[in-house]
Image 1: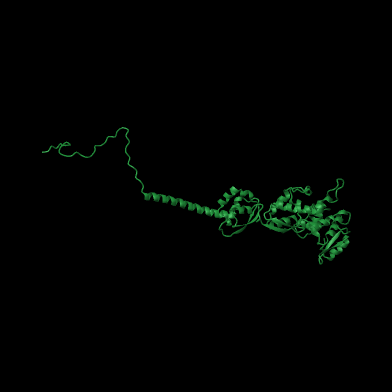
Image 2: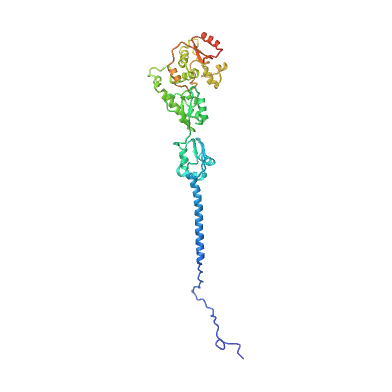
Length: 389
């Protein structure tokens, strides 16, 4: 009978299992070697990376191309607009309008371009014609002071227009507003010595000096430049006559330049177009002979029209308490009542020599008939049923 307590080496081979090893102090545990990725996995990862790079590049390229098309005005639908920029128009408002009208597609991109190119400081008030063929640089250039797209208008100021009529016409044609013109006329000190005695504060100070002519104005123009252009014209037309009003230090001329412009403004409103100098003679006869039967009163109907806003004068108008009322006050009115042309100015400076004190309009011929006395004048007035002056 075999012994149940066998020892190795007696009756059976010893076990191949190795006894557990005791970890010695300081010994490092053995690590399992990392698996190597297969070649296929490495290729797939690289391919995915390449695809991501290509996709991102494609997106950026697409976005960049879209932005470049807007920046460089490529492939846009044809659109043309007219834009008006006022003195107080904000740059952001201009950009909003460009986007709303389809001239640009990306406001933020245009603003970014403007920030780098200082575009905001280059854009000036005016009316401009823009289109989608213009890139960002061309758009900014087209809204600058040297723009060739800035809209212009040829405007004729008729002889005899009042300052209010002149300003209304300029406003109507889009040059600038009535309010801005009035403000600039009243408060800007224009550099002409013949305006030195015209106090600031009232825009009527320039009545008579806005020379009637045909002018080319830019739409949306600075009102200071608009007015100055007309004053420069007046100065040029009157330059050769200015010495008449200078005086010699001892004697002063009988009539100042302002007096002449005032007389010319009345001639302009009263003349039939053929009798400038004869009308002038009537005015001077009344001014220079206050003891005559007219007693120094000019009695010019056109001054009443100036007071009543352009209506046909009435008997009631003759009682209007105003220094412009030549029926109520002797001598010249307070100032010009219109802007006279050169023919009226010359007539005021070189009147005809006559003995006439009165005139009345013949309704058939549309010409004035002149009289020396009130009696003669009354006969003509009765004949033409009160159509006289």
